[in-house]
Structure formats: C-alpha cells, structure tokens
Length: 384
Image (cartoon, rainbow, N blue to C red; front, side, top):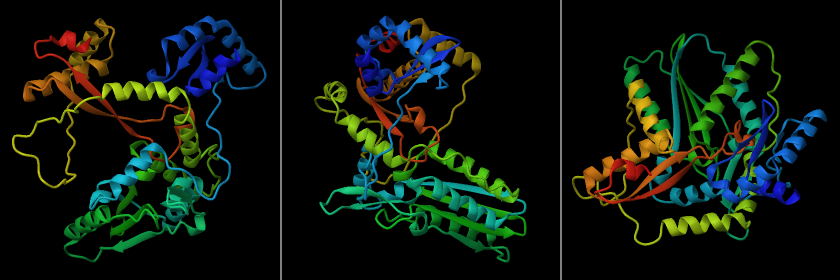
C-alpha cells in the first residue's frame, strides 16, 4: 500500500470520494494502465483510507500537496521560465511576451483603494516581485524581492483637457504595451491609469509572460477587485493566505523532473519527435527572413447542432470532442498543404494540481501533437 501511495504522490494524482465512490483526477499522461489496475485492485483500501480521513476531520481526498520549499537566497526557474528566458534574450523578442490588459470604465475612482489593492496583491503573490538574474555560478535563478523593494508604482496620466484625446490615449496604450521589461531589475508588472474626464478612465496593466499567463490574469483581476471593494467598504481583511508560492512549484517541479517517472515520458517524446521535424508550408510565398512575432486570433462559433454532431462522431470511436476537432484541423491543413506529417501546437493550462488554481505565475505550456497519416486515409482512420 505504501508503494501505491508513493506512486500516487509522484504522479500528481488526486483521489476523492464523490457521493461515496472513489474518483480519480489526473492528467492522462500520468495514468499508466498498470497504475490504474493497481488502484482498482486496492479500491476498497483506498476508499477506507479516505473515509478514515473524513471521520478524523481531514478533507475527503488524498492529495499530498506541493511542499513549501526551504528558505533560500534564490530559487530555480521552472521549465517554462527557462525556455522563455532564453527566447527573451533575442532582439525584440521580449516585447512579444508582454501580456496586456486594457479597460475603459466610467464612475468614481478611489485612487487610494486602487493603490492598496495592488500593494496587497504584490504582498500576497511573491511572483509579482520576482526578478531573474545570474547567481555567483552564472546560472539564471529567480530572486524574490520584499514588497518594499519590489519597485512597483501606478503611473497616472491626465488627458481630460486634451482636444485630440482619442489619438493620445491610443498612443499611450501602444507605448505601455510595447515597452520592454528588464527581467534583471524588474518590476515585471506595470500599471497606468489615464483620466479622460471627471468620471471616465482607461486602466492599462502589462505583465511579462515569465511571471504570468492567461489564467493568472483572471486571478489578478478577481483578487484586485476583492481588495479594492474591501478597502472602499472599510473591510481590509486579507484573502486567505496562499499555502504555496510559485517558487515552491518551481522547486517541486525540478525535483519531479529529476525523478525516475520522467524518463518514460522523455523516451516517449524523443521517439515521437525523432527524425526530421516537418515545417508547415502554409504560406503562399517564402517565409520572411526576419522573425516578426506578428500573429492574430480568429474566433468561430459553431451552431449547437454541429457541435453535438462532432461530439457524437468522436464518441462513436471512443474519442473526445477535442480529438475530433484536432483530427479535423489536421485534415484541413493536409488539404491546403499536401503534407501528411504535421505538428500542431496546443496550449494547455498546465495547472494539473489543485494547489495551483489560485496562483499567479507562468504555468501554461504548449503540447506539440505530431500527426502522421496517409493522404488516402479517411477521416475516421485519422481520428482513430
């Protein structure tokens, strides 16, 4: 039983009682057939363990949690941070990883409340006051500054009296978004507030991707409003403290990646990506000689009946809606390019552990799915 519990911990698997029945929550890549079989064989014992925890006042789930890292002068980077650090060293690349948010709102603004809210966020999330530089051995590490040394401030601009207000505000937004960050000095979060009239404002915030991702932006805004509203209502009670910080995740991940279970995953991906890797020839002309980092996002909403049909098609072969759509995109790219070896990058949240739900940090990753098929295959064969 101890060996099984150790495997559950190492593979980041959450066991929970749902309506009295044992449920398993884990990324598919962590669940080998052998481990699933062993959990099934010990189902009764695991259920009893969870029941005992519940009776003893412990949460009805088995989750060892990400441990808090021992105090240190500096900490390792996560695998995604290391990659982004390297990419950020290229000219103009750092700006490509600025994550902006721009809001226009009307109403009374309590500036002291806004400053209190941001200072509370920086106190709460260490990653918002983290910088990245070499240690004495020349290795890039992350250093957590104290809130007092974070160097954060809110920049205020008043365009209320300007005639060409729209042009100047648009220019200000572009300048704030395109201004590079200094990863060594920080801070890696900046905020600007632009006054357009007595009751109209533009709120701009920009974070570097090395400390944030899309999920984090939602956490930031939610908690910012919570602190802001609390201050204006005279209730400055803090949110419940975070059990761990991003540095704890980075230390935990480093240990996990050095452990034996990773070897199997590494062998799988090296096999999957062996040989010459294909480059998608989707452009009508030659690729530009210099990388521009230009991009766009396209949105398409399907009719519910089409969505149900696609989902049903996938389920008919034991697949998911995601699998059905990925196969469809692969087929589409084949029809445009004639290539039958295609790599598709899929963004994933990277928050497989329950401890990471309320964290601000860089967890998102890109899963590279390599699709190899024959042009004469049917869609059903490709989906299979």
